[in-house]
Amino acid sequence: MLSDYHVHSNFSFDSEESPDNIVSRAIELGMPCIAITDHQDFNWPVEGEFPYIDFDNYFSTLDELSSKYEDKIKIIKGIELGLVEDAKSQCQNLIKNNAFDFVIGSCHIVDNMDPYYSGFWKNRKDRDAFELYFKTLLNGIKSFDRFDTLGHMDYIVRYSPNKDTNYSVLDYRDIIDEILTLIISQNIKLEINTANLAKGFSFPNPHTDIIKRYKELGGEYVTVGSDAHTAENIGYGFDVAEEIIKNFNLNIFTIK
Image 1: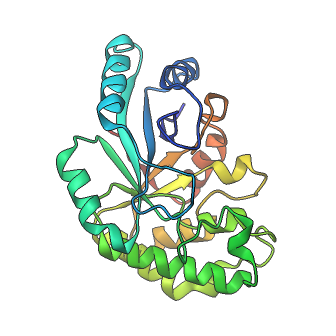
Image 2: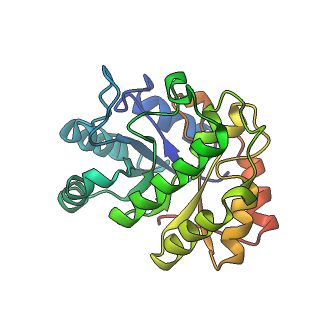
Image 3: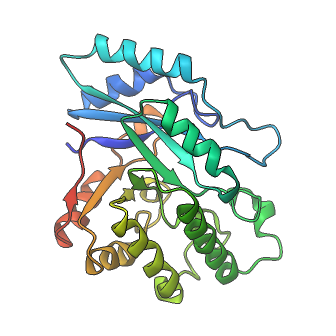
């Protein structure tokens, strides 16, 4: 089975799963490696939420698990780093001062709000919200590009009250092309994030039309992640991801 390169443990503010349970589940599924990629989002605006990692404890725990399971699986010490323009120096210092094996760059905040919450959508049309998200993502990448893969590129669609009813990739073709061209030029991979499938969508993040366009523009490598916040969702939808990768003749990035 493909290795899972996007999993959250209880070092993330929105997961209660122990790293040991995550590793055990990955072993059970026959994965050669598992990337634990907990949230670090600087300048987080949501009151009462703290997406900040206790790094001393984090690295210590992952090192212990690496030793415990060294003959069964490779554990990748990763992070999902929020891309926001006003956190450039913080992101730079974090990457400079910590030995991460793997870094996901993602956008979770738009107009100083998380689209996960219904308040973001008040008095907003889907078209305007989706366009603003892509613009925010592009600016975030321009501000900081020291990461390995671009996470859940159209994340915002998951949380629209209308789901994907009003979503057409062609409506945002120019800015999507700009994002894809930029990451290709920086040797940043594109993540195929299967969490959308677990939520009942017919496509992963990003939409298959974006993955196709990535290939057309010269993209070669993708990473595959479940974005699981519980052990039971690790590897969910990977059969679909494998089929997409095969259809578009893409390569899977792995850490050896």
